[in-house]
Amino acid sequence: MTNRIVRLNEFGGPDVLKIYDEPIASPKKDEVRIRVKALGLNQAEVMLREGRYVGKPNLPSRIGIEASGIIEEIGEGVSDYFIGDEVCAIPFLSWDENDFWTGDSLNKYGTYGDTAILPAWTLTKKIKHQTFEESAAAWCQYLTAWGGLVYNTDIADRKNILITGASSSAAIGAMQIAKSFGLKTIAVSRTLKKEKELKNIGYDHVLALTDPKIEENILAITNGIGFDLCYDCVGGEHFYKLVNTVKARGLIVNYGNLDLNYSKIYTLPLLGKRVHIRFHSIFDTMRFDKQREQGVEWINQQMEKNILKPIISKVFKLDNIIESHKYLAEGNQLGKTVVAT
Figure: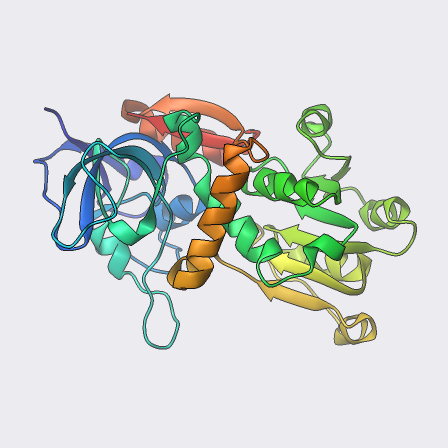
């Protein structure tokens, strides 16, 4: 049986990803090995590949944090799963005693390949009616949004939400969650090129990030008050626009940094409006047992009811892993980019 494993021997562009035929390894204590059926691509893996991630792996390194598949072998101490179970691997990252992220998990694990060994605590059962491709596209987007927008917040009391990077799977996941609470959703994309498609999948309004009148347009949509809630993956030089258009006591949740520039922000508007700014990572939700269990249960319930349904932009084959990363870099996708084995 073949066992293709994707590794990188150096940091750089998509071409650094190489496929190797390797022996099948066995899981250790509290681990399982899955036969990977599909894996979801994330910006985190692009950052890791380029050598600018929060944790740096030792080279040569495996890559990948999200997948779906079938359990092939179980390590000592695993009692919640059995051989043949269809499961999803939820993204996680290791941490130290001071709450800083480390590269330990990056050195041990990876999902790009025909097989993957993973800690049992990072798994959940696959929803039966979902395809493996849909299951591989679900967890990074939904659990990140749940942790940032639902857990320990007052989302049910909010009226609207502004979502940047609107065509990404993470943003679409947040949009679906927000709409389940009845919020009006305002998409912010780089341009209006995808306006029709974004409205077709559920956004109520679509604005262009680079429009000189974007602040004016946000205020017009929100009756001059400003938005209640924001889910932002852009950051950078555009962040001041969010500060300028958030309502008094509004909440801005940042979970990404697609724009690497800095933003010139004055503190007086922050103070004047008592703005709440929260930085969130799925890895925090994952490392706290009760929070993780609560989030996984909530998301599974919503997916069972088809209230949350992953939107897939394009599916590649594992042999075309380089092409899949090039497609991700183009930024033209609407939803999740998935690779099937």
